[in-house]
Image 1: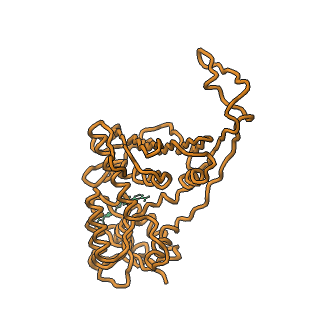
Image 2: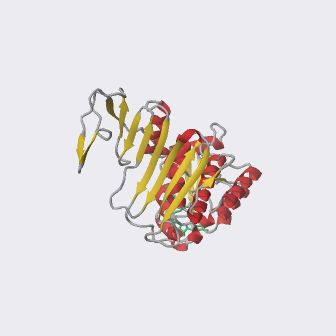
Image 3: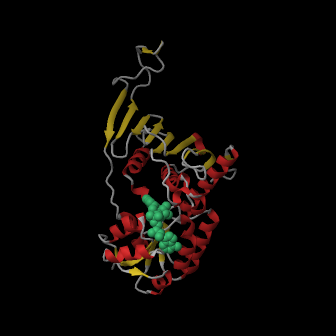
Length: 351
Ligand code: NAD
């Protein structure tokens, strides 16, 4: 039987994604929406969607067993806790909260009510990430020691609540939360240290870009970068292993892989650079390397809700867990601390 869903927030994500996908879902049916803005409720009705007049009315409707909270970040916690304690299973948009303390309150409310609580970390289904994870897990590049994950745009930070600190704006909370979550899905090692710097090119109040270094046990490292003032974008993913390198230039493209099949070369021809010669940096040939493409894995936008519904029914484990979400939040909090102090943040007990 389908679960009956109410979407809280009929904005870009609530209306443009959750409602839209609920209408074609095989696991949820759409009961309706609630938005604090009467104009949004009218818009929903004009689109043939039931609009509840208040959150209390949503909670009082016993036919609804699942709500998705898609409202600005600073109002997630109160809404999520109220829905959980009101007996609903809850999906919350990312970033789940404004702090790890708020997140803990939400987790406590989930445990107290016995209701499922999870976070829409939908970018775990991105095909570029899935390709990198597949190559990492396959071992074809040997031990991986460096992963670089970048998203570059050129329009600055959006001029809505995302540019304001009090609403949980800034690129660490907006995009960083996805990219950090992806890295923590690839590496299984614990974190020893992070270092972060913020950009303030178009916005002085919140970070409109950042550069985050994450150091893991076993000399493994990740670099996560978000930029909103990059008129030329650097590649989306770059991964180095003991046996080769993988690259995804753009999330619409396949992965390029070069593996090293013979370390020693008999005769390296030096290349001429601008004003000199180098053998060290001379490109390799096909005698010592294999070059191939890995096709993008397939992915289905409905799989997140399928897992949530199966978890409510006790048939699957919840895919986005409380511990994972808390760990990502601890990394983001450390990023804020590092950017403010200009120093690395160490995790003596490992994170
Ligand atoms: P938005 O500004 O387009 O829409 C937010 C809506 O929430 C508005 O219609 C507003 O009236 C309503 N609202 C505000 N406070 C409310 C309250 N207390 N109760 C009910 N309604 C309220 O914002 P958006 O882009 O839809 O973002 C919403 C959430 O979704 C954010 O947490 C954002 O980070 C997240 N998001 C996630 C993704 C993703 O890929 N997972 C993408 C975009 C946004």
